[in-house]
Image (cartoon, rainbow, N blue to C red):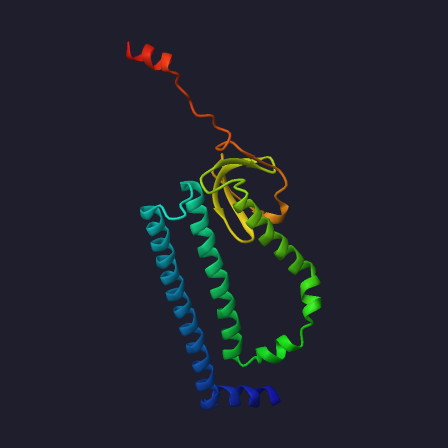
Length: 198
């Protein structure tokens, strides 16, 4: 009988259904706004890199341009989705301030998951700024050969020679061979040029 009463109270409680509907609408609006922000950020990032490309302002090579562009977008997406998560939880009714206050900062930082995350991010930046490889490079990562498709904050994605995608946590990348950087351009001496012209 108690269960039947609870079901009846829940089904016929108009106020409760209105509250649930409001929460669902809020969450949907949050996700819509997030998609708009990401699209706007993508447009701004593309325009910034296009401007730099045309004016040759702080211009990198094409490989690094593509990598930096994707990395910037990856950072924006992580930030936006983190805000979406926090805002959605607050919309449901979870007090995030009280929740975060109850979490030990030291415990969070020293946690295994946090340590791996920090290692992934740091190694990702080292890969980028040391120019170990960039998007479009033909590489061998941990003895897996393929073409770099994406370098993110946490992971690197390559397309193998068999067409399959391989994902590597940046902190787990220990062995890299870059065949693109290893290519030696053909240099023609004046004698060779003269011989070809003849």
